[in-house]
View: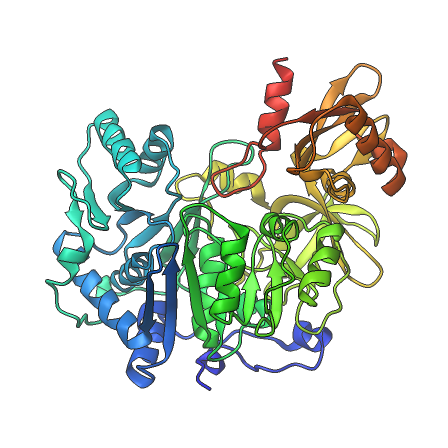
Length: 554
C-alpha cells in the first residue's frame, strides 16, 4: 500500500464527520509543485505503481506507471521548452480524454506554464474568445479535422500565429505532431529554480467557467490547489491506495482534474480513463465490470441514463463506492441507483471556483436529494442580506475569505470587476441558494437567477425537476419561469421524453397531475414543452437562461 497522503494532511483517519470537520488540516509545503512533488516522487520511489489505465472504444488499452508518467512528462516539458513555452505562458488544451492530456498538463506544471483546458466541441467564436481573453500562446489539440479547421478560422480572424501541436496520426500544415516530437527529447527535466521556479501563490491552472448565464469567466487556481483535492478524493470519493478510480468527465471540464488527477494520485489510487467518441451507457458499464473499478463518480445525467438500462447481468462486486456532482441529484435517481448497485450514491457540491465544498462524506448516512454537509476546507455560511439565515431558511452559499482558504480560486483572470461582484464583505458569494436542515444537511434550491417567484411563492427549479424526473416518461427536464401578468411568473417545464413515450396533450396532463401529487400543488408546471434535447453548456450543464431567452422571443 503506497500513498503520499500523510505528507499533506495533519491526520488521515477520523471517527466521524464531526471529528473530521473539527480537526482536519492541510500541511502545505513551501513551493509545492504537483509535477515534481507527487508524480516524480512516486516515479522515483515506486516506479511500478499504476498511475493511469487508459482505454477507448477501439480495443486500445494503455497502462502507465508513475515511472512512465515522469518519463513522458519530462520529454513533453523539454519539447515545449524548445518551442519557447515558459513560465506564465497560457496553453489551450483541447485533448478530450486522450492520455496525452496527462503528459501535457504535468509538463506544463513543471515548466510553470499555465494550462487552459477546454472542450473539443468549441466553435470559432468560442476559440476566438478564449485566445483573446486568456492571451493564449499555444494550442495542443486532438487531430479532429473539424476542430483543426475551427482553429484555422480563429487564427485568421485574429491575424495571429500560435504554437500549434496535434496529437494522433494525422498531419496538418503548420501543426507539429506531438508523438513524433516528444520522442526526440530527453526524459530528464531539472526542476527550475530562482525566477523560473514556481511558488505556491503562482497561477497553476485556468479553467473557463460553465457559462450558464453569460460569457465564461477565467477561474484561476494556484499551485496549492491539488492538495485541496485530498478532501475530494479521500473523504468524498473514498479512493483507496492501489485501487482504481473512474470519474466520467471530459478534460475540458474541471471535474476531470477533480476526479482524474490531483487528489487521486496524492491518495495513491490509479486513475481509469475511458476515451469514448460517443457516450453509450452499456459500454461504460462493461468497462466498469471488466476493469474492476473500485470507486466511481459521474454527474446525475449519466446515472439517469444507466438506470434506464437492464443491468441485471453485470457483476458490480468490485465497485465499492459511488459519488455524484455537477448538478443536483433527484431522489428518484438515488433510489433507482441503490436498487441496481446496492450502493448509496453520495452527492457532493462544488464549483469551478472551489474543490468539494459540501458532500455526503465517508461517515455520513446520505439523505436522498441533499448535498450533504460542509467541507472542512471552507468556512461556509448561508447568507441573505448580509446576515446568516436560520435553520430551514434559504440563503446564498458563501465562503469566508478573510483568510483565503486552500482550494478557493484566486479570482477571475483579467477581470477585477467580475471578481469584485462575487468577492466582497469578507465572503465569496457563490450565486447558489440552499437551505440547511436541523441535522446540518444542506439542500440545493437553485442558482439565484433561476429562482421563480410566482404568486408570492419562491420556487426552486430543482424541487420541481425532482418531481418530474420521477415520472417514467421524463428522461431530462429543465424548470424555468415565464412572465405572467397575474402571477408574476408561472412555472414552465421543458422535457426530454424517454424512448417509449411520445408527446401528447394527455401526457402533459398526466405529468402535471403527477407533480401535483409529489410536491406542493403551487409548484406544478402550468406550461410544458417537449423537446429532443435541452440546451447545455459545453460542460453539460443545462442553460436555463437560453430557454428563458428563447421564450421571451415567442
